[in-house]
Length: 294
Image 1 (cartoon, one colour):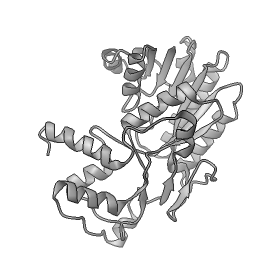
Image 2: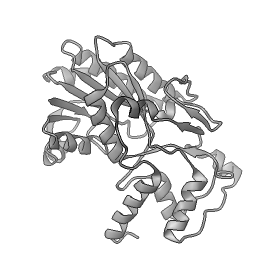
Image 3: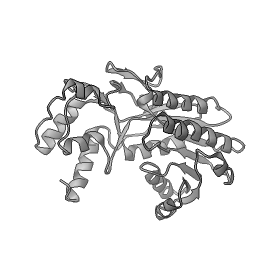
């Protein structure tokens, strides 16, 4: 297959590497000439274009079998989200619509779910985010799904990604800056980067246009349980509770929910390499030990 990846960063580059390993011809969009060498080194054929600028896409051929948009806003507020996600996907849709790919995968976020009572959440639940950035993600999903069946968009709602050199809770604990929010009972939903890559490949192979899936590991887990495991594994103290005013000010304290991956696993038969944070964190700890970082 001829595959195009928009967003060749933390997820996109290893995704391209895996697709190349499987024998696909992979192209990657990049906005700057400085990224050309990095993509080429990974075996990805670089194409210079910016998804937020339709004119830069229109000079390229749109002849692709599979397209994956895993571009990230790189932080910023609502304006950055709107440009990267809503405008970016609208431009991709217009550029590709005359010759639609067989599959189009867009990586959204489980932040579209606003539940804060620890309840289980599936794709059947309403998405009513309380933040402007969350509302932009929902609008982006609706834009793509409204184009089905003429355009085969599939939405993957990703949980919090961790993996090599990334992972908020692990890094926070290792830095000695970790503290419990209240009693630590708030549920966290996570997924290892390698499983994001695996999930995208599985969706490319088995999903049908118009579907929405949660991509999260098998075990939503409380913050307290994460820190208890880390304390036991590393022989370090348990974090203390944060003062209420500090806990309330943390941007990650937006939701408290248990996101289900059952629909995705049933549809694709995907088996997570890291079914819980324990396997994923252990892999990262072993890498840090080997590198002399612990």
